[in-house]
Image (cartoon, rainbow, N blue to C red; front, side, top):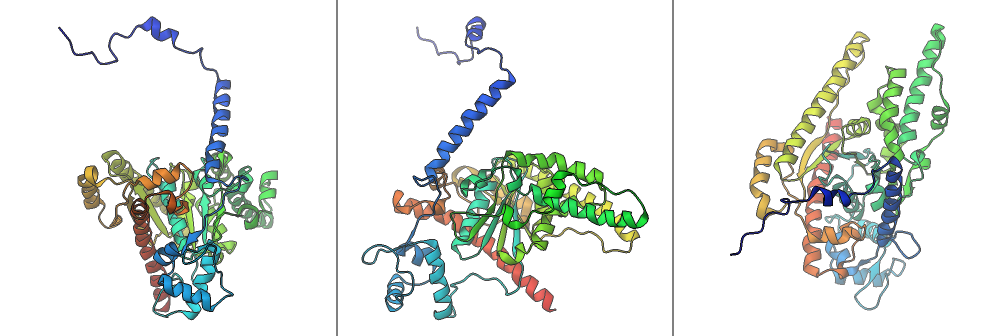
Length: 455
């Protein structure tokens, strides 16, 4: 007589189980595991690199350029190239030509000056308007922050914008995607925050000298930070119009150092350090969009990112746990920034100074990895509760993302010839629609700023 097998967790033998255990783990074993992971991470990252170890952006075909990048017909593009031999001619024979993104940007400029005025050859940005800063944040990990930030940055670059990406996550995933080389914390935002504190100390010391009070000493780190400039930390990437400030493990030290600095000078507005760098060093004039990829925690680096941001995007999955976590994230944002405003404005009002007020152009929650066959009901619930905080488009899960990710690439870096054409088009459409909704927010914010200033 046959019986149904018991589940595998019944009748386990404790003695046999103990014999499978390794010797007790000591701390040195973590170093070995870390070394193995570092080697594996390097090997896997190389999948997206050229044989010489450099990451390069692929070329773009006439089909891609005319379908996705420049609003002209293929035949018209060929006629323009034939009539203008000084323009990039691409590689290949016949009608199938391939162009670098630098060449595509040159073609954009040509059509913008010579083409039909009613077509958008260059993306909108009001003349003289500062860059818009976009933070992608949520303190729950695994919700798609880095993937969302990376693909929006690539979308914007393909659209013709000049982009700066700042990686604030010490895990450095964004830096890996963009092929960044980050030697130590001095190649991250750490010295920029240190510089802001050092400048605040110098200003405080002027006041103390005048009052005959002892000055706050600057240590070697702060002295060195005063000499840091954007060129020390901003690096080019394999994208001609995406630059990067990278991250690596030592960046996490900032989470411990920032509160120590704040204790040394209580008047230092630690949340403004990144904002001051972007404004004082001319970054907002040098770029069109700055994307901030934040760590999965509401620490001091994330607070700096949120304070600097004009636009806040909050990715989450269509599940109860991620909905619940995101609600708590918004609650913590309120308590954190309301507390800063309340604490600072007591002194501001007493001194007759303008009050501190945090404000964002737009805040949007974005559903990522969406599976319509299983998550529509939950997504509708989230939409109902978050209301105008929600993006209208839900970013579908797509096989293209996983396949591209195996090569440590974004989907825009993947060569469509490596995929079924329909798979590529569907996968790309997912992120194109996400970018379209973001771009509408972006240009609407710029337009509103321009017209509010005119009133």
